[in-house]
Image (cartoon, rainbow, N blue to C red; front, side):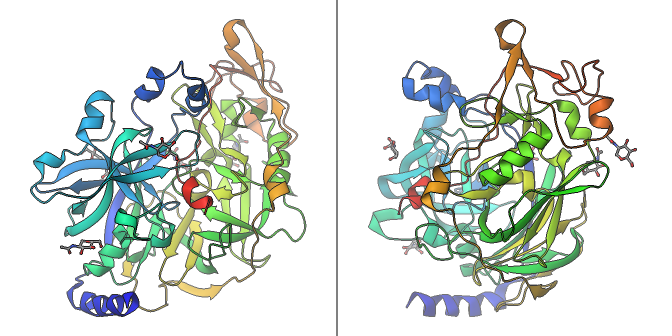
Length: 500
Ligand SMILES: *[C@@H]1O[C@H](CO)[C@@H](O)[C@H](O)[C@H]1NC(C)=O
Ligand SMILES: *[C@@H]1O[C@H](CO)[C@@H](O)[C@H](O)[C@H]1NC(C)=O
Ligand SMILES: *[C@@H]1O[C@H](CO)[C@@H](O)[C@H](O)[C@H]1NC(C)=O
Ligand SMILES: *[C@@H]1O[C@H](CO)[C@@H](O)[C@H](O)[C@H]1NC(C)=O
Ligand SMILES: *[C@@H]1O[C@H](CO)[C@@H](O)[C@H](O)[C@H]1NC(C)=O
């Protein structure tokens, strides 16, 4: 019955769709203020753990308006979850919200759908947001409004801005009034005739750019190089079926500054990995992380295996390559500069870590270098190397109903597996940071074994946080000034759904 009505709505949609796609900017931002709730609760023992994850990571936001008249909010764009939620004005008045809040009393079209029924829990410890299930008009960037969008209105919780999950409806945390699912924003774009298929293309753009873009219902052929190759989605954990964006990662290779390659994965590697824009780093199996970390001389700076490297390493010409769907499948090459981020505390954080609860995740430190088409209707993604810093929007092609994805001519089908429970529980072997100076103000890195080129012999910084220049007489063990602090742990993974 649900299927029949969807088909009817798609038929209706094709007659109303003008262009058939919606293009929006996506803004890379670090939250502008530390999370005040965490500071307030810092004496609570649980919050020692939470506070450790009060990282000021980069994330990707989209602007939406909610209500009549519209109230503007910035929300994290998250392929790793499926619920839209926003913070209420009541919550934000007593806690600082950084990208707007919503006052239901100022909207003539607002309805509470299930009071107190909303509660979403993300992967970072303590990261839950809770309140009412609500419904109102939602608009993205001046597009035609979705008149009746269900969302969570948070009045208690951890995060200081909302999230727009754009995954499968089956991966929603819960739904109002005991239902299993409700229509996601992407579902409603199709039902309202804004796009033809539940599919969109994501282009985060390079780390040094402030804006990327997303095209709902379309592919922008100028934003990638080479061919888009389709990858059938792989089953998620716990036999949940193909309701998350897991694809098969077949090989990871490090290429040093002189062009010499080291394969970091074992033979016949076939790991299911989640493509998750809501996680800022890349979480891989220990065999890969151990080799990468020791090669880079990265050191662990906290109990969560967050790692740091000297800032100057962002200048290396070394790259890391990811091959998908079998050894002949598509490869995305990621410059190391895309993986070393300066946090708000001016730490140079190396954007990798071990799998989270057994889940391998390719987050923003991978996605910036890829152009990815996410096709929910057909449980497929298509992937290509991102073209750098492309702004034009004149070459967008609408994705029609059916199965064809514009620009895709081949499929790489090798299947992947999830980690078993013992592998999921194993911990990586990382060098731990050592400190020099008073009050742990200098972190000492380990000696890299990979050849990183001039980055290390010429410009390793001393006190070079936030900068990528300077000089040091002790190039092999450069000092990193700054307080150790966790960073870059993303919000994209819904823990509630993992427990199913
Ligand atoms: C969102 O709105 C803010 C404030 O108007 C603006 O500065 C920002 O560029 C917008 N971001 C996007 C992604 O459009
Ligand atoms: C939401 O759920 C989490 C995890 O079960 C729980 O710790 C938290 O207290 C809940 N929040 C509210 C406001 O009920
Ligand atoms: C609004 O959406 C909800 C959830 O899909 C649905 O149950 C309800 O009937 C809709 N209401 C209207 C007025 O369309
Ligand atoms: C931004 O980064 C890209 C990719 O790493 C690089 O090619 C480009 O030169 C950089 N641009 C600037 C202005 O630094
Ligand atoms: C990277 O390669 C360019 C061009 O070959 C070279 O000029 C630059 O010095 C290299 N950078 C490092 C850090 O090795």
